[in-house]
Every structure is written in structure tokens, then in C-alpha cells.
Image 1 (spheres, rainbow, N blue to C red):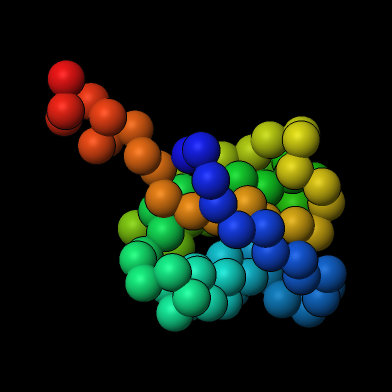
Image 2 (tube, rainbow, N blue to C red; image 1 turned 120 degrees about the horizontal axis):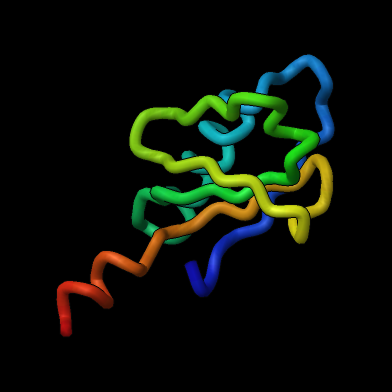
Length: 82
């Protein structure tokens, strides 16, 4: 993912899956496309990050805690064009 949207949610009562769904809905409304990739800080994901349907969740220490970096994985379209 080369570009994405940074989403902040520090509500301790909301689980990761719900946070990703909220961010994905906003992303789709704003950019007109469904995101399929989300990076989160390892402490937010816990031991087993739960993926909402159609969104791959990966951990990355460069993403700040309580933040999500969500967007579209452009890897597929680059592979198809070659």
C-alpha cells in the first residue's frame, strides 16, 4: 500500500474489528473504494488480529498505538499489469 488513510481511535471499549469497520466505512465514503488492507501497531492487535471480512490486518511498529493505517493494497494491480 503506497497511500492510505490514518485513523485514530483510542476508545478502550471498542474492539479492533469494530475500529477497522468504522475506518473502512469512512474510507469508502470519502474515497469511493473499499479498503482491503489495514496496518496496526502490534500492541493494538494483540496476539491474533481479527480481520473484518475483506480486510487483511497486518502489524507494523511504525504505526503509532491507537492508530490504523487503512487503504487499498495495490500489489495485485501491479502484478497483473506485468
